Structures are given as C-alpha cells and as structure tokens.
Length: 273
Image 1: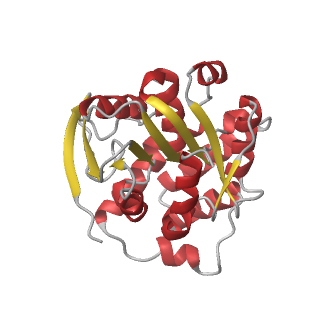
Image 2: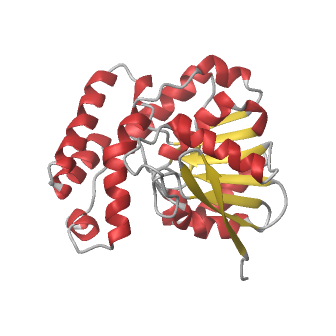
Image 3: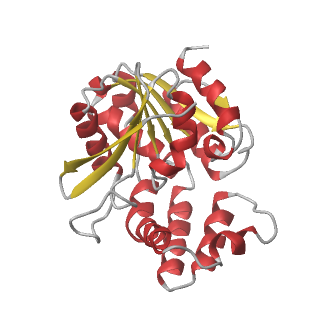
C-alpha cells in the first residue's frame, strides 16, 4: 500500500520546522531528538493505517533550519515547537510517542501544554537527573562532548556507547561513523553533540506537573535494553510517577530497527491493551 505523505514547513521562533503528515483518524505524533522524520518514516507508514501520524525534523536537524545555527536546542524549545505545530494542524489533544531525546521533548510538552496531549508514551528517555549518580553521568556527557569537539569522532561515539551501556558488534562503530558520510549527516551529528545532548541529558521532569496533567502516562522500555543507561533512567521515572514500565520489542531503537514488529505493540498500548 502506498502511503501519501504531506510535507510542510512551519515558521516558529528562530527556526523553520519541517513536518510530515500521513493517514487519517486520531492524531499520533512520533517524536525524536536528534532522530528526524526520515527515521520514523517506516513505522509512520504502518501506523497511518489507523492514525493521522505527524512527524518532524527537530529544530537544528536536517530540514528544520535555525536562524542562528549555534543556538542550543533544549527540551523546552522543542516542546514549544511541537505545541505550535499541533495548534497549526488543529491536532490536539493528541497521542504522543517520543523516543530517547524525543521522549524528553514529549515530557516537556505535557508539562507546558497538558491540554494538547491525552496520551504520552515516553520511550527510553535519558533523564539522568532521575538517578542518584547523576553528577558522574553528567561528567561523562561533558567528556563525550569535549572528545567530539576535539575532532575525535570515533572516540566520542565509543565513549557515548560505553557510558550508555550499549555493546556494539565488532567493527560496527567504524562502519557507522568511520566511513565517508554525507555532509548533512555530519552536520546533524555535530549539532547534536555541540548544542543538543547536554540540555537533553540535564532535563529534570516535573513529576507533580506530569501527574496533574490529566494525560495517560506510559514509560516504555525496550525488551533488549536491560541494564543500559536508558533502561535505568526509564525505570527511575516510572517509579517516581508510580507506574510500571511498559515493555516494547527490541532495544533503544526498536521502532526503527523492526517497525513491523514494533507497530502491533504500539497499537495495543495506545488502545489500552
């Protein structure tokens, strides 16, 4: 089945936000950071059979250009962008699935604009502020950023995956980041390290505001993420919210690695099963 994709650009403060809409029905927003709309396209196509699916390139990434390319990206700014987009599309209240940094964006959205979200699925948010060893973890993030900005790209990625508790197959790091890559991918990577990673990792959810939002709150964890950093942060967040984590197929990027396997679980969770 061919999926019709309608792309648009929304002017937001200091940026032009690229977005895409698929399907019809209740609105489902798929949010990443730094993952862009392209990374969500396969699962967006699948979910568009039942939902009006909205995806975006977060500010500073790919087609969402900034007025000032050196402006930092914070969860609050990205949440404001999403709020403006939902208003522009007359799409709220919506269900929002955010993964990784996108889950942090979604948490910030619910805190600031609870009227626009009826269901939040925060899939593996890296909310390191929830952990007792937050200071050590923040120091690790600073080490990763400094290593990247020194020009040691492979060294930065190696540290990132080590600190995150993610084991890569032998040779995978060099395959992913050691080969010649297109200029846009490199630019997005640099923006993430230099202007996005720090603000995302240091975001502290407002538990009282989340509880008072009225939204159905779900914290998702990949079945294969046990022991990884985002497994720990997600479990800490769920505990603070007084809910049990919801398990999804795969690991941190299960929705992108196996969208056919992930979509049925996402549908079931959205329907309350």
